[in-house]
Image (spheres, rainbow, N blue to C red):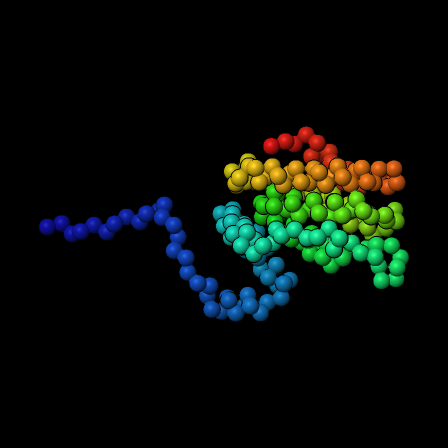
Length: 206
């Protein structure tokens, strides 16, 4: 009687998920942010593309569960300086930009557009010193919008955008904020701070 054959491994089955090794978890719990960044960058740069893809998938799941995309109040992003000399960016603005960068960095571009629309809208209420800190911050936001739009295109092309109406609403919200700030700043600002963002948005429709 022939011996029973061992079933062949199913190469298409999902991997078994386990727990993080106790020692590794101890490192994660106690490492500084810089040490974790260095370890993650080293892992991703020395691993196959599949590892980077799995990492971004895990990051997207985490960010969609933690409310990172919540929108701030526009009036909390800039404030009069303590010395009374003009306005400056607040800690809330830095938090918003950090959250937006996390989102578009892992391919959640449309969610980041909704966040970035808020400082654009807030800028419509500002007057700032040309060449000063506010102008530099707004230039950062302009660059962020360019990155977020590229992330949104990749999200759309990759079939990860989900509900197109939601994606379209995020894009339209940013377009509306850009137009609002263009009208408000026309005639006094040395140069419009979101020029590149406005040009990128002009020809993109969903």
